[in-house]
Image (cartoon, rainbow, N blue to C red; front, side, top):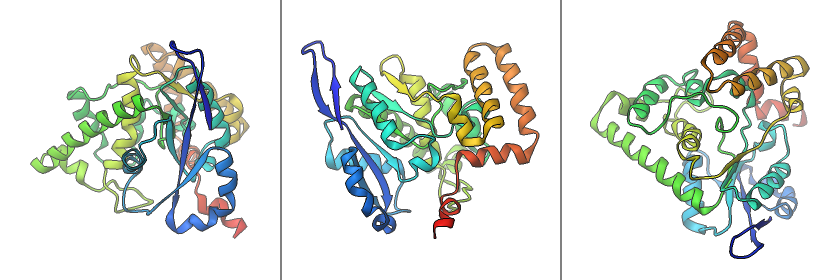
Length: 306
C-alpha cells in the first residue's frame, strides 16, 4: 500500500505501508483463496501458532525479524467479524492519515464497550479478577492515568498501524511495565501474583493476565504520549452502531458515546452518562447481550456455511 508523506525537506515522498494479518497456522489453508486479493490490497498473511504467544509477541517478532522501514501494523483474521467496516476501508483511512503526518492510526472494534465503560481498565474488571489491583498499582507508579477514555483513546484488539517512531516508543513503554510486573511476580507480591495468575478467560482458561494487561496499555500509552506522538482514530458514525446492534440500541449507544465524549472533563456531565449506563447495566440480559454483539462468536456466525 503506497502512502504519500509530506516533508519539510521535499514536497512529497512515496513510501509503502504494510498490514500483516495474523492467521492461525491450522487455518492457513482456509485463506489461500484470499491471498491474491489480500496482497493486492496491501495485506500480508502472517502465520502463527496459537497458544505459543500473544499479539504483543507477534508485534515484537515482526519488528525484530523483518525490521520494516515503512509504517506497519498487525490485525487478526477476525477484523471484519469484529469491525463494522472492511479491512480495505481501514487501510485507505490509515493511508490518508499517515500521508498527512499521523504517527499511529487505530480503530477500536469494540464501540459498544466504549459507550458503556469509563475506560479500558474498568472494562477489564468485568471478567478478570484482580485487574483493579493491577490498575491501582500502575496508577501509583505513574505508568497510567485514571481518567475517562473517549473515542480518541479507548481501544481494544490492537488494530493499529504506526511508523517506527511510534513502535519504538510503544515497545519501550510496554516492556518497561512488563519488566516491572515480572519483578513483582518474582518478589511474590500481591500484584505480582495477580499478574502471573490465571486471567479467568472463558475462551482460553490457561491464559495469564499478561495479554489482557498489554491490550489495555495501548489506550494508556495514547494518553501518556499524545503530546509527542500524533494519533488518529477511525471515527464511527451512527450507522456503524446500528449495524452492530440494531436501530434502537444503535441509536441509544451512539448518543451515549456522544454524551460521554462531550463530557470527558465535565464531572456533572459524566454523572448523567453514568446514571444512564447504570440503568442499562441493571438489566443483565441486555447489558451482556450488547457486549456479546461487540465480540461475535466466529464459529456461530460461520456455522450456517459448514
